[in-house]
Length: 254
Ligand SMILES: Cc1cc2nc3c(=O)[nH]c(=O)nc-3n(C[C@H](O)[C@H](O)[C@H](O)COP(=O)(O)O)c2cc1C
Ligand code: SF4
Ligand code: SF4
Image 1 (cartoon, protein in one colour):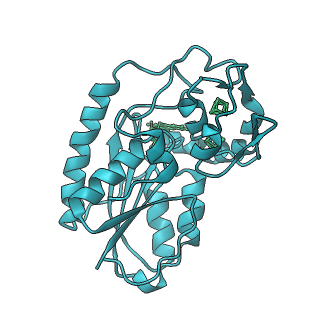
Image 2: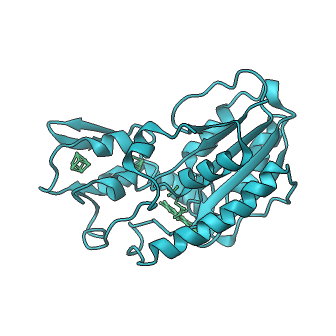
């Protein structure tokens, strides 16, 4: 039976993890959360890979998993791998959602990656070192998943106490964006937004009020023309070194 991994990503860390696990496991489709999917037929394993946001699940991931129909696949091997800058989280939430649907999350892991939240802090310089550590940790997780390992799901850290407030604050996040004169209307920001929150209008990005704060638009704009308030102008930009803007826009077929 085939396998499927649903991923959410802003700067490619989670997409790279999903890709590496899929390669190791074999016969695996990787599918972006944000694009509707109806699970039809039976799957051997169903995985979720996503970044930790404020100690918890991205709101878009929570919505997606809640809406996913697993009726035909309750006995599949479910796994979740979150990527984070420092501390894990969001695994106990997804375990609960899957359990409410009659499935069982058998495996949960956190992979430490480059910390990408540019609205909060400057981008560090150790991109390659972090990518290497990410790859090593992913290799271990991928082998465990291939062997259908069962791993206890860790509780969220203390930071998750602020997760509810973070999700509520998303409604007003659009107001923080500003576009500089460096914008050349290329449209990349519209294409990389995982939740279709950006439309190019009169040659400039316009935000639709349902931002997830994934920072993809800020990080992938080739002209560094998107900024958040006055915080990101001098912070450099990051994306995973082995993930291209084309991978984000078109997905990856193995
Ligand atoms: C809105 C936001 C909140 C974040 N919160 C956390 C956090 O609570 N703990 C943490 O370790 N990293 C946090 N990070 C860092 C990301 O989880 C990490 O860099 C992740 O690997 C990014 O994945 P991506 O490249 O697939 O988007 C946050 C990033 C963003 C954009
Ligand atoms: S990606 Fe940057 S340059 Fe391109 S349209 Fe968006 S803001 Fe403008
Ligand atoms: S508007 Fe930008 S930060 Fe918000 S969800 Fe879209 S790409 Fe991510």
